[in-house]
Image (cartoon, rainbow, N blue to C red; front, top):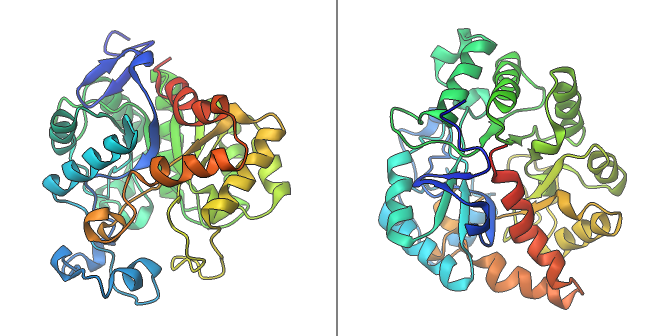
Amino acid sequence: MTDLSHGRIETVLGPIAPEALGPTLMHEHLLCNIVPPAKRGNPTPPEAVTLENTFDLNYGRSGAPKVPIQDKDVAIREVDWMKAAGGNAIVELTIGGLEPDPEGLRDIAKATGTHIVMGCGHYVHGYQDAANYERDIDSFATEMVEQVTKGLWGTDVKAGLIGEIGCESPWVDLEKRVMAGAIIAQRETGACVNVHPGRQEDHPMEVVEFFREHDGDLTRLIISHIDRTIHDDDRLKQLADTGLILEWDLFGQENAYYAPNPTVQLPNDAKRLRDIRMLIDRGHLDQIVISHDICFATRLQSYGGHGYGHIYRNVIPMMREMGWTEAEIDAVMVGNPRRLLTIQ
């Protein structure tokens, strides 16, 4: 297919050679509205965030809607801070339902000199347009192929991967149709697929079985949010043994309380690294990627949060203190992202 950049990485500014991609955050949002559509009429504005309430807003028990991140100037400042901390590239997974802004991402990339790779497809069913409810698998597949080969959301900005394709638990039919379309698009484009799994510990394996049934490539499948989904070694080992990519992407969220599923106790960053270490010691180093999944304003430095530079400022030093080698750090931050984002 002539519209594909085979052997290259597709950024919002166009294709680049894989070797140009340095340390990469594999799951972030720079311009995004995570507020559920039913609550978007009265969101908490950024100016309502103060030193006094940032912690409570981040912790989640307050019940207040998350503050959207839709200010391009703030995003530019935050990405500049990330670059100063050692980052080079960001995978931006704001897709259908989350108010994607391809042109805005292009402006951020130009202003900061950062490689930004954009995802495509649709988020969980509660965020999708009503028009999607009647669409079939082929319709979704055609849309995602065109988003990778021609451009997203009425622009000529191309997606560099598919996802984060949204699932809930129980998994609904609309989400399965989108997922089946994503697998077709994976085969036709050579792009990898990122999946937002349902908030239930066995749902990632449901996704694996779905991929197998639909002839998807598990080595090009990234399961996001491992750190809020799987909490025992046996399930982690079983998932890793399938050959897929495991993504710990809530680095910086150090509180145990998880508002979307209060039965879950989130790990802190040290526990995340211990879980990853266990899998590395089993031979799964090339299946690990990490990020922060910043999708609301109070996790940004501008509003009292840790920002996109946290992994570079704090987590990588912790890796070294825990005995990680430089080769292992390079694999997780550079080598694995470079391989996964290269269009096959």
